[in-house]
Image (cartoon, rainbow, N blue to C red; front, side, top):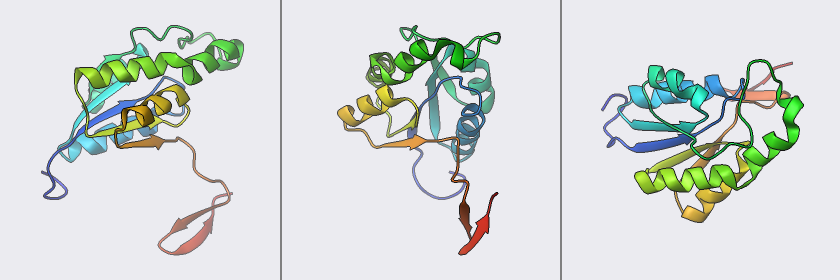
Length: 149
């Protein structure tokens, strides 16, 4: 296995097409696949082509319909549907079903997907959350403080 002698693992990533959260998630897909891991991305159907191009298997949300991305509509135009989509039971249900189709070794859930994070905790799976933002004040690099402003 490239990058070390550990056994390949099965990763299930959960995301949604929110714009800025997509490139970091796809970069993670590429990195994990390059290291020989098996990766599935569960997410909004608009992510399918990009997820497969990055090397991941893709599973679209099938029942999460309270909010869907549209090129002519800002998230702010449907805050209620957006909030239900991320924090309500839809993504939790999607995650539980995906785990039922094949239990991963590791779950990586978009930090804004509160419903899916709750389900991951309930499932007892090893889980981490992924965020697309970094602290603005300082970033530690090689033991030195560096301003990012």
